[in-house]
Length: 125
Image (cartoon, rainbow, N blue to C red):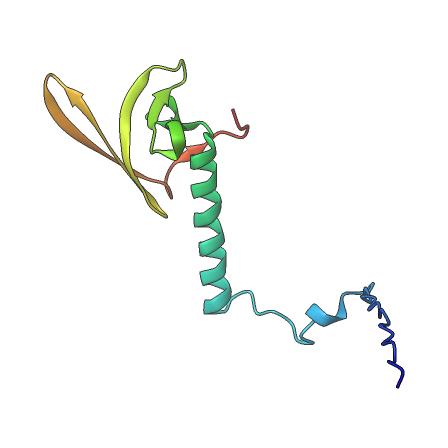
């Protein structure tokens, strides 16, 4: 008896790229005024504002410029002013809210920032 050698054939499957992107077209127009689209737009805005804050974009509060500085090893950092002086420690970063604290004359003062109302500068510093 002779052993039969098995021949393994390699089959390459080529991915067909559609030029006109038809797979993503549902065939109907998007209603921009629908509740779902409004919710998605709001969610995208919150994500954008949160990312800008975490990256250290400058923002204004009461005509003073501040920015977030991340701590070492991925820890929560602090908020510094335009020159680089420490203003407050950050204890929580949420989707639309940032909580922090600082000490004034030996007393702890809580700071709360609403990311939805912050005015970010045009350029990332």
